[in-house]
Length: 298
Image (cartoon, rainbow, N blue to C red; front, side, top):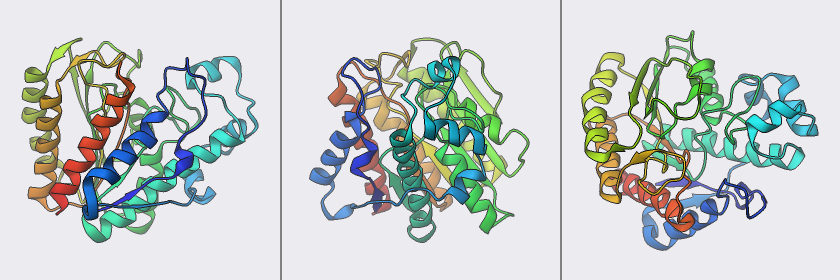
């Protein structure tokens, strides 16, 4: 299975910053060490401007590039805007574009980052600068306008930016299973939002996932899937407000991968968020999901 990673996915931040940038290099090292020949890791190119402009407003891209966000926008984004941040985000989005092309050929592929679902067309929020999934979907639609595309979002937080971008596009189905009373405080309705109580146990989470996702895919009948996995539903995550154990993560991943596999659909798998109290374990959760995808692709 082909995976995509670039060393510049890691953007320098102060040690006190809550976003764990080190998870990217840590998870990539774990995957290389444990997957062996089952996984190849390739470096992506930055996403072309043409692709970015299919989704994002040019003035927003310029404000990120020049670091001229106003105080409120900068606070909502949570990352220091500037040329370096935009370059890093273009590489991350390029990884999702490359993974999409690989999945069209091979069936399954991973970007060892991505899933930046809080980015809107005109602004970034929640550490999400560019909406990589939206950019990839718009490229796929430009090639195959009739295709139906599903976004499966099992990150602990609702994908408000993705929902807003595709709110009026019937060709895109957005599924999100998340904590109902958690960030973002204002939700943007998706096609199917499964809102769960705070500190939901893994057993209840899995019951809801199994009851809702398969029937939704059967009804929509997608041609392609983007899966934002998320490491933040874990019991030790600082921000997810869920109580999934490592074993629950394995069950989640196997269920989603089983639905993809039995339908024979091409799919891209993306990291999404993760803020475990043990930063190394955040990387471990991401890596284990990728290793399960690789096993499913074998």
